[in-house]
Length: 499
Image (cartoon, rainbow, N blue to C red; front, side, top):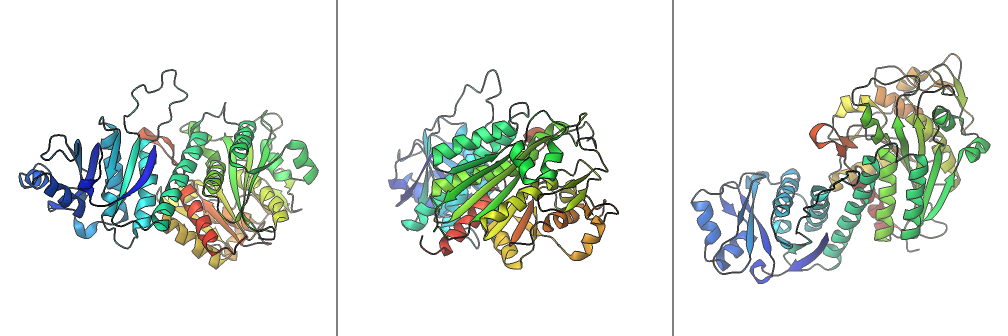
């Protein structure tokens, strides 16, 4: 899909289909009024007759209009004018693209980007339009013997803006395209079956990404991890025939002495729970347990596309958590790369084990900030549902920065406590601490565990267990939190000194 920016009055812009908004009180938006005038009142006649009321998310395709300005006009309901904010805007774009997909139009002029969204800039509307459009058009059918044959005719979408703001509009468009492509890359990886997408496959995909986008690649194998003393990561992989991998991609867009932002993703390509076996229902969804790692790879793709003038390192701690004769047992004690010992009380709390060694390994980069991303706890799903990701941090400035990036990207997080009081739950009689702290505040104690390995740098943890994928009819990876991470890095790039 190609996207572009167009300016000028909509009736003067050639397109196979113009997409204009109508508010619920049958009130035409500014672009709709301009198109209505050029088509001799055809749109106002439709709404006056009651054929379209402008309810949020509704659409009406008009294929025969006066004036021959457009082959088609798509009316999109915006809901009440006073309530047209972020959610309503995104739903309007989604409804428009879904309807366009069913038409024979090869291109479209999306005028919804001109409709003011409360508290948001037009640049925000442009970026969100691209991201939502690509989300709506995304399909994962490469594993089917007969993929969908009826490809949509739609090939390009032009985004209408009032007056060309050059850098702002084009930069917003570029960010939207890079974010959307990063999300699609992450979704493709997470949606793949675990018999294909294992740690070695992830490493191969990272190598291909490095080659095509000029990233520096480093991959540690099992022997490297043994030499470095990564006892926690290795403990998770012991029950599997698939060898673990620590994958590192680097983008060096900043100065040589500029400290990098480090992203660490949990890459458990399948999680049975190990000896602490999960129950059978929905276990197939544990292929999504590498969604944090996939989001890191997707973000690195976006960073390279945008050529951000900062240094970024993306790390994926990849392993498969399986039962077996050599698998780690509840009660085993392992020594992490940091030298701290951990009593493994539950082998299904494996994400924090692979992450903690990766966090220690990343100290060598002397990072400006580290963000880990993980489908870490079911407790976070209970706490926040499927709307917001959980945010923990050992630095309030970083926490605010991440939260603001999430708000700006509409990939929201909620700041959770990381108080020392919760560390009491991780006490062990036999090791420095345990890998679980019991049922109460399970997402908090998981973050408290990770905090013990983040004492040498500013750090934030994103628990994406509730937001990384959807279940049921719409089962599949979401690509979150790629939008948040890209927005965070774009913000860092804006304030970065020249390389």
